[in-house]
Image (cartoon, rainbow, N blue to C red; front, side, top):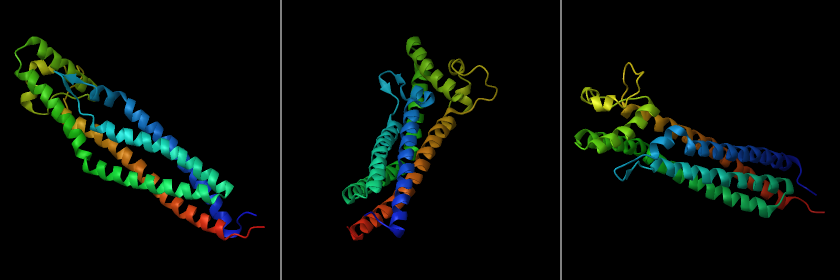
Length: 233
């Protein structure tokens, strides 16, 4: 005989939350794959100049998100099946997986908060490094290589230069800027906006998932206790 009364209601609530948890895993996996292959970020993060590569710190958070999405899909399925079957073993395993996943998410959130400015600053430093080396170089090939890298920044972000009057006075930099720009915008500002918006998206997704996980942990323990105390015929 299965659970009755309020415990039965908890059973279906847990199934309901787990279904959305599984869907959230699918969404997070899809969003993280989009962030990994987004044309704007990919074109910038795959740049190289004189053996120096663009910083990949942003990809660390994206790879963590991909792993979390895949695990969420598995855990969500485990929770749904455990709730329907009223299995204490599956629900106990589900609860343990949730605790580990929640701990990893908190750790990833703390890491992301501590490094939220580092990602854009590293990319700005890379841009400035290419800019300065190209500006000071007397080698035409090296200067052309710098123009090629800067052109990707300028066309991808629709910006030009560091945002200072001296940078916009350099003809070699102007040649790499979008031709239809009337009032050039600083690439520093555009880089910060690009990565800040994507980090806010990651943070919002993590917050929604964390709230769902807290409810699921409560429901799974209540249901597990209800199954243990239910009469067996």
